[in-house]
Image (tube, rainbow, N blue to C red; front, side, top):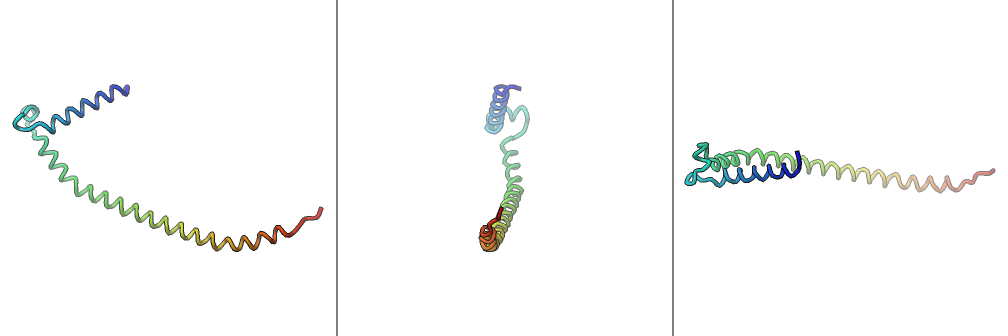
Length: 103
């Protein structure tokens, strides 16, 4: 499917969606055909989705921050290991360079 056709289809769906939301019982174009009050159903679904959405966002934040704390702890432990290994390397390097090979 070409991109322009997809854009046109998307725009049609947007117009239909707005038409359903903006339709009031007094106008009743879609409401009279379908018998469904779209706005009230949307509000019911939205209010029903708020608690699970908050739970998922909260779980994601806790997981993300716990992972970040673990990464910070791992970085600090690696830095400590590198600092402890550096003095050993400094003492070994001059000894290795001080010897000259004879040909």
